[in-house]
Length: 300
Image (tube, rainbow, N blue to C red):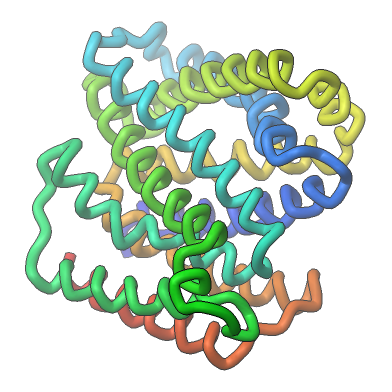
């Protein structure tokens, strides 16, 4: 087994736990932006410390950051902020497992964005996988009960948030891969942790400025919820280190495809932690998305 595969599974595990904790934060009267900010404010100091320690211990020193690093880093960091906000907001509309499934449309889009951003290629079989996944997304987008005009049932806020998260996460994964590869020198973990350090500091500053400007008092509420928010930051750090390392080792389409194991984890958490049930139509959507993922993996 290639080493990036267990790293990706570790990333998916940590990320599922983080989303679970962020759903709890959302239920503690934090705003969507506040629950998103929690992952950055508590993880960025730890990431920077790890980056500095590793650079010193490995004797690789300060990174030589090229100009090409910054567009990739800014695109990845910004799109991840927006994508995380979409997922947290989505939890108010649909249950945990379906919310995560919506978010996982990123695997159907990452090959396309890899082609646009990094010049990766994809085949007709990949396109077929995307079309199968689209049918699954349409099934999941239909609100429980399935009443009302069809256009309101399909084109709704949950659909927009879920697809938006998938698109943005697809962009961020390729952005992070481009940023880490642009560093050139250094081993895999060095390039991954240096990229992550720059990204998390940028995201913390941007989110803090936004909350101070638009949501007065929300920063203090996040700090007051430190018991859960701190765990969000810790799981975010573990997951991000694993994701960034995997993206440095392998292209985003492969990594996101293996990361689909998060679907199973989210079903388990949704059932045993939140007591949620998934209806027959939603199971159909999940199955179709799973088939599309399998086809995509085979195509890659």
